[in-house]
Image 1 (cartoon, helix red, strand yellow):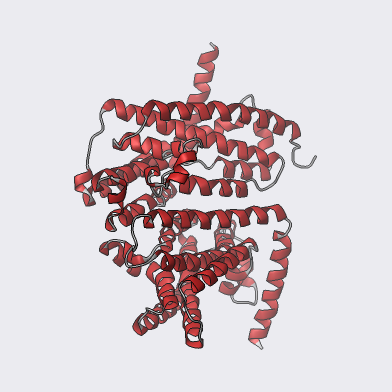
Image 2: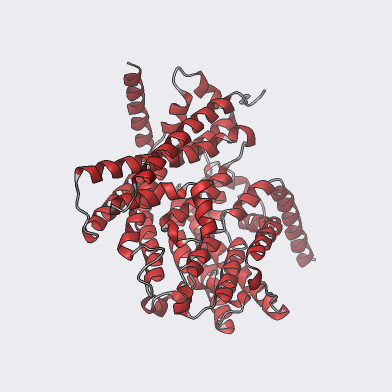
Length: 264
Length: 264
């Protein structure tokens, strides 16, 4: 009953934001070209790394392409949902319109996380899937049921971690008002997710698994893709994702207690 | 008399923008942090011994990436985003009435931001040297001045390119997506992520005809003491400015003719 209400509301969200975004049709085309060029650019960069080396951090070029494809899918999801919505939080808090959100008889986190959608990110997601199909064929991965479930689970976990990271930073807006730049810092760190974690030095590897869990976001799903991941890593990823989701939820409820609307 | 007036205008603009930027020092510090991608790239290069194949020692490569970081810090341009916001909000109309091209205002804004950013960039460089003590070096005064000049020229090229795109706001509402498109070749071909020397020959054959390697690769090579053609690089930078400036003037005068203020 409750779930159905949220589904209906989400349908309305989709409808309104798609309608407003499709006003800028050329923009979507330009965004598509940007996504293609940016993927080509990173493959170019990767090919520079591999031009005289067979392996980087124990990964072959064909295997490293899987990381690129997963990164592209996740980046597309970020651009479709996280980026447009969570930058909106900053606006809500600065202009005091968060009051209206809180007054609605609907969960506030649901509202601000899913209100908007940016359709040009879909194209990037499709691009990522195309690349991953290509990788599956060049790496001769055989598709079976357990492979599909495991990769689906790990990718969903990555999405949860990514969402929590974005939501976490956006929530701090309640205290700091302008966190636009903190998001920019997060973005530049996430860029590292395009490369296998083993290619970094030990200290950076620790940093990127503990403080900003980029290891969990792209490397573990890619290992699952290749069938070289151990079970404990997958379990760890599930645990990390759950912890992140719960903490981000708790943090949002905690932060709301400190929210005083614009003029008070 | 006339030059005195211009001097006063420039000074006032700079003073106003500098005090404005000082208000946002935390944000600027975060901006500076978000530019540390070159250091991660350096880590991939040296950790996998990729630099052996391009005949650059670890020390020279770390100096290169540090300089690339510095050049990027002082050539970041965001004029298109400011102009787009101003033109959507209708703030351009009062600017147009003033006997001063509004782009001078943005130019002063950028310069003031660079001055504010300088200490943060120094702090980051300080930490870099703590971790890489062997790469400390002192460039001689002549090279230092030349590289400051070439960094400024690189900033000018990017400022002109973005101003040309910003002028497209007179025709389309969202010019920033075109800027995001142009940012992709800037990111991958300028030498921010990998020095241009390491590029494969089929790219190197044409890349020096484009403005991109002169944005970061050339000034960074100059400052870090890596091999580069000083007079050739500087003259290409000046050439690009001479090419772009008339184009900007043309598109500006066409655009202002096309401009219709809000509500007309």
